[in-house]
Image (cartoon, rainbow, N blue to C red; front, side, top):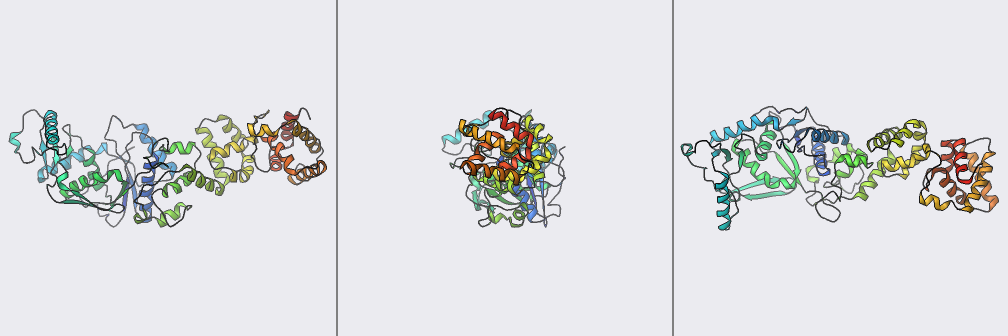
Length: 486
């Protein structure tokens, strides 16, 4: 459920407390750039002992959907980013936005404009003909309302300053100066009484007590216009940090081919939330040369001064390496739950059933599997030997190891293994070493085809550990599938 922020005159006495916000539009999933913005806002608030608020900017009713709101909230929760209170609906605050717009008119800082679309088009054409930017020329700025045409619903425009500079003192971009003469009297309330984005954002940030705004640098020009509204109302302008957008490895703006996907896609690809947090933190922020750090360390170290002015480049290889680190360090019980959930989410029912029916065996195997995987999907694939149904599907690399010669060796191994009284790693190891010595082979020449026959792959935990995990009967049956009845 979305709520509205309470009305206030200043920062509700919270000037001593840092308040950040994440304000996505619910038109799709939580994309990776938005996730990073949320992470920075969250980390800064945590570092300062403050709070982050969540506002859903759902004023575009045609594009905003409840499903997208749910996806945004789920994405933030999966990433481990929490917020204070309930999500706030910008659409639900339309009456407050209109109230402030009309208040600005009464204060003499805004005015009603009755220009028709045709008149606005003519203004733009005249400006272009004069070599000027195509924009509104302030026709109704100082006109008396008695001149208003009947039956026309006006818009409300802010009175932008005509001269001087508008300065954005930004924590990332530095001092950015905008010439007032380049701004027009932009609309803050449409003729149907709905606010524009520019106006709604200012009113919401003020009423929510936001002290620090962290967002993409594509909003930098918006900051100048928003400062006009802040100044007109006599409100404190929040501190701002406009971070460069994420680029792809080739330096171009991040697109889907680079990895501009929703965070749910990364979950489905097998990335852990703690790994994604770590990686995103390094995309545009740094703490010395540290690449791997815990969330607690990130919170402790985070500062706006550490944000980079240059655009960061998304790199799947680095993300995989970081993810691999977190998989290696993770508790097996935690990983088991993630594997089960991931398999279910991506529709791998065979793996859901297999993992579910072999929990204890999978948990025992995971310490051996974890160093070999960089994603949860790879971990699931590696675990399949535990519950694979016979006859095993043999991949191409493993199949190449199962030649007539190696199958003959497998038959000898089966004979040796059949005679073991104790099915344990030390006993199997000793028996296979003795067989290798008798045949004048290195142990690897036995272990490689044995692994191929028992797992269908060329990568697995130690093959003798595998044999103990799946048990004597299953091991001998899988060998039999490859060499005939044993």
